[in-house]
Length: 110
Image (cartoon, rainbow, N blue to C red):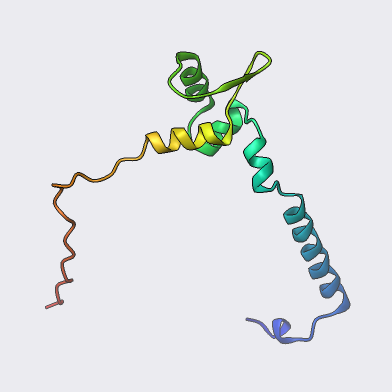
């Protein structure tokens, strides 16, 4: 922290902060709502970004019929429900006989 940080804000500083705040509020207001996202059809590129996969993986999986999709005209698209299905199929729960993780106390330094 410097001496300048403790000084009272100037008009220029207030205007800059107000401008930043206005821009942030406008970004929030323009963000899509949950209902809009539910109705949106995502391109393979958008779906890949959401799933953390490559576009090539999404396109090949659609072509092979491994993941659910729909067509808008001749273009493959994925809805939010399709993306949730892909995420759920990757979930793995521990086996009931799996050895529980033990938490050992840290050894004291000698």
